[in-house]
Length: 262
Image 1 (cartoon, one colour):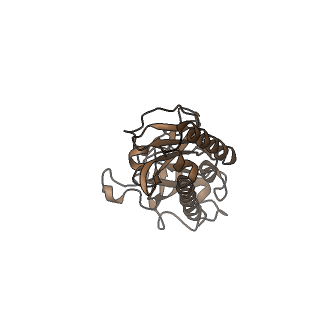
Image 2 (cartoon, one colour):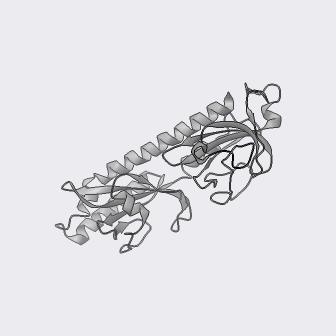
Image 3 (cartoon, one colour):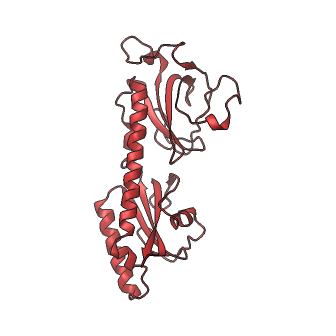
């Protein structure tokens, strides 16, 4: 089925992309320039100048990266691109979680680039001891959004989009502008209100629902566990069940028929 395959393939593509971002973040954290930036045995002006040059080069050669910062072991920013140094990030999740291992933060609007980004962080080790945290912002418009806005397999009325754990769209809508972190989507497919336990939320489902526009659609969604995201692919029922569309699903016997007014 086109819609099921589309949902699954997009979700896998997104998981692969996140894995690549994590790998790049971990690799950069082991570079000598980033480790030296936290080595107090090296003259400060020299090490900071060298790491700033390296940061500039990385950003110029990786269009998906919009910001790189280095936090010392106290959470104080000592080097950054697009942000001043001396800023205390010691209470921020990106630092606290980044001390323990690779961490991916929530998709958010960057105050410095005014673009939506995913922040990742990972520890920097010096002589096998924790010395600081590397923070990288990935511009989601460069790669992540391209996965969801691709209309392949979605016919004339279909779209694919991501929803975060709080139920807000975090990728563009085909039909409505400015939905990111603003448009709420109902994640519960149920015939009766409150009939689904929390443990069953975000499981892979196929249903006929009223989408966020109030249009009846055939909807498939699957879970991306690492981020607690839901990947949706939907197409208007008028098209989905029209002759010639490769649906392999025929209401009402093959799918759950739910009407959710969002």
